[in-house]
Length: 80
Image (cartoon, rainbow, N blue to C red; front, top):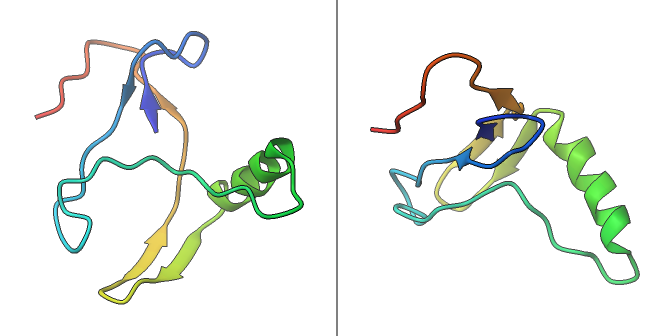
């Protein structure tokens, strides 16, 4: 995700998928809390997953994704 400030995170920028089954849907990295797990355990699992390359086979396509927190340090970011 890209945010305006890592300290305040008052604005988070994202984009909707442009193709496939999820076209036009806004989505952020997240995960379900597995049975018997706490929200904190789910967070730890998600952070480990999101700080690595994610590989997942959907029916329609293969996903290979690297995720990083980024911060805009100059100018205003305008999504087009």
